[in-house]
Length: 169
Image 1 (cartoon, one colour):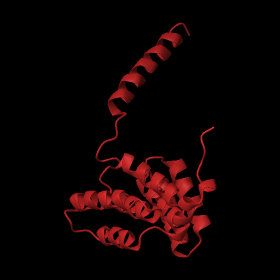
Image 2 (image 1 turned 180 degrees about the horizontal axis):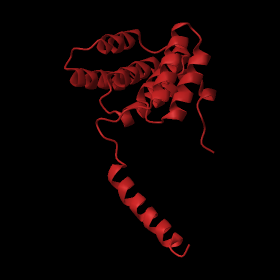
Image 3 (image 1 turned 120 degrees about the vertical axis):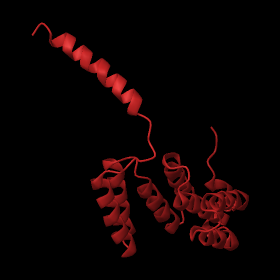
Image 4 (image 1 turned 90 degrees about the vertical axis):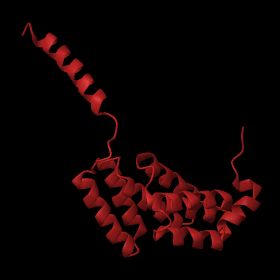
């Protein structure tokens, strides 16, 4: 019993050193099996049209493993389907913070920016996507189509209505 405090102290010091060396994400990071399974269930719910259930699965996947970039991308897709491009952009950027060259996240961000009316920024995302993919990936067509379509009616209305913008107090 006399050595218990010393042993605990040594364990804390060793744990600190070991986590300091492994705390940074590595290129071979893998998502937990539970989180991947929840994303798969979310994809099935999303394909069947049940966006609320799909969102619940994706949020649960993030609770199981907050480093699951695919769950953030899927939540971004749901936000876009609900005509919430601002929320979608935040989800895509979270995925990009985890995997900076994730084509689905770059494409989603570009499409959401176009949906919101930020065409110049959407074109920058398109250029980045072409650089990441080498100009040869299916996501490019999605962003190009979103840019050609332009902002949604809700995004245009939100810009025209000064009451919809937050005010500084």
